Image (cartoon, rainbow over all chains, first blue to last red; front, side, top):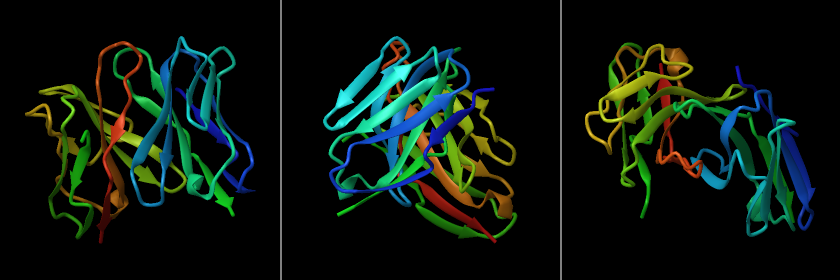
Length: 113
Length: 115
């Protein structure tokens, strides 16, 4: 059974820092991997999706990488801003057609001015 | 605007009183699913549907029912709610093109309290 771990669980940084959030998974037979952002009490917003054949995806200040063989993905946030404060979730989608995702428990990020 | 909508957003009910949470998407997605989110447990899938009239259990289906009579709608039914079903519920949808590029879209969530 797939297990997804996100480290660290919480992070507090001053504005302007570059950040790395980590996601590791136990079964490398994945369909794709998706990073989400969740604001308190709100739904999930998709940030980046990486297909299993890809190594990385970029959107603005965000860059996500995938190393399937080692079971790892990282989300890099450049020049962090207070508006980046949220919980970041990693979801790994299984092969086999059911697309059932396994979510990590998230990294809670606070960027203070 | 592409979106997934859920109703109601907040609900307080009592044990045993049947309730339905509606979910609708306007993106013509085949795949829809329901999740619950609980502190310390993260997001867990309850049920999913690959297309109209095709539904299957996720990781935590006990106490829930779903139906998929139309492509755009996927209601979640709690026939006899219990306090352990107090949670934050999310509906989601995605395309199933098989390209690996199918982004999942989430609704805003329904916060349920069962007394």
